[in-house]
Length: 117
Image 1 (cartoon, one colour):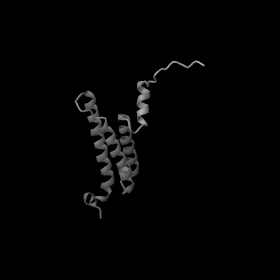
Image 2: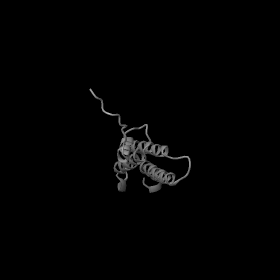
Image 3: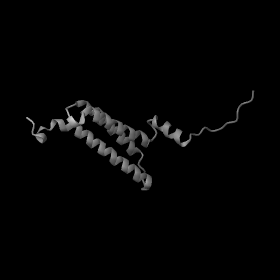
Image 4: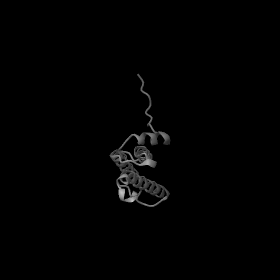
């Protein structure tokens, strides 16, 4: 029986990105951004935004956004280049998502701001 010649298996760029998305040990900008943005959408829906009401469940999207921010920070390089600048921009976006989720969580409890009795 004759064996097939050995050919190393390699991923294309799209397959490698998709593969890294589901592997927590690999760095992935897409995973960090998706975690943050999906948690913002969940927090937005849980808060019932224009008519904000207290919901302690917003803590879960807040923790997920923290995880997404940590995933994005893992992709940071040591030396500055344009990739590093893009990652920095995504980190600022994640921080804005975190602040918005904190607002959704804490604003309904701040009666001194709304002058409600």
